[in-house]
Length: 338
Figure (cartoon, rainbow, N blue to C red):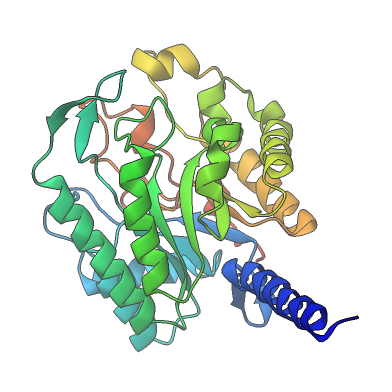
């Protein structure tokens, strides 16, 4: 073999090796650990109590600490939905008190424009770009400042599913996602509904993230509590089969304790709400997550009465395993093993 041919082969081998290593390095593993054990059972956390809401006065450090002490007997990992408002206080409280709680930081991305069916811009929301930029900046700063606590960053929440009230075109979401991923060392994900991730079009977004955060709510999909876990498992399998090169994490699932017979909830929700039903589903999910080594974020830790309309019984206010006054519902009356 001629010397030139040998050199060409050698160069090609270097290129192939570099490409292979780059591909392997590109996906950052999501492997949260507490007390030397991988975390599979986790929780979603919205901190606002009665009289508080996003954009208003945030909870105090003392209120965050109270919530953390309530959560720690049950979970060692939480997911929050924004970074610029209160996330820094939560992380500071965790560090200063030496608490064994990992956090998935959220980056809340608001729509920056409204488009027509042909993609034409119908309306621009002038304040949204600056707000989104604050979220991105805050998430990057906090992930780097608290590397022992921040396990991952999730950019956007239900921005791609067709029914969302805050849809963001993928070409507008992608720059925020890429900037976060370039600025942090932890894994980066996007959270969205199973009915987005089960479509081939979702592969483009999946290729840009380290793992998939999947929302699968059996109540919103007409299931009874007895059917809920099997349905959830089926949605997970469908999405995982489409995205075999990505870990799939269940970022939201839950069972509400109150529903009204109005609007979408009256039309779509068929399963009976209640504390006993919630307890049954929560215990089934915990057992399945541990047995199958599947990470699940249960929605959610506390009721949030600021959500939704004026009816005190509507579903969005009642997903919590604790009530808004921090008293436990049935599922929390006995300490569940991690």
